[in-house]
Length: 228
Image (tube, rainbow, N blue to C red; front, side, top):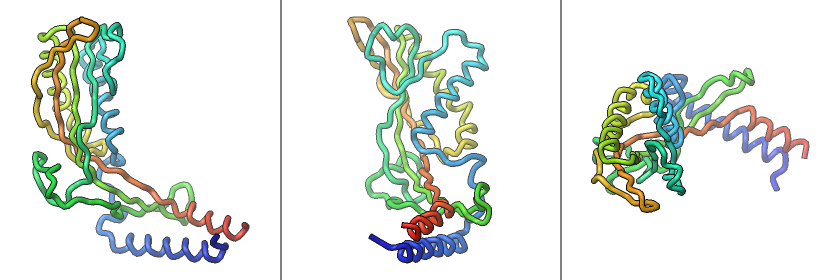
């Protein structure tokens, strides 16, 4: 097990490396969006926020159900339902490609986290926060369920329009790219021998996973090592 001096040396070397990357980074100290970048889970939550905001603006009384999975009990489907899922996810491509080719197998991809930013730690003056990020290219699906084809068609078009109207909200919330890919074949299901119509919308979304390294935590490792 490493002793206190070894831990101190490792921490100091790592912080020196972070400082070097910070000094050489063209983006150091600058934010890329008004809010922190979001990963795929955060994106799905934002879609739920958009659906709620659009319903509120329209004064809707029969609110939609928005969830990850189709309810197991047919009795739960007493209103229109929108579900979401991740269809494909890969490390983001380095190349500037259109969204239709973003997930092609031949692309050169960002397999490791890349240094993003260094800022003063507001909670620990004199220490810094170092951020790393990694891009991901995702294909996501939204399935619209309703009792009739007419209602399902109407709601699918409503969702397309709502996501288009609130595209700025996604960008302001840290979503790098968000594009409509298309609508799949209409489906009619029969759970519990009751007809349910389904419409599937596909989107491409580029997200970023951020990792923050806190200098104060690294320094505390040195202190613990010296006291052990």
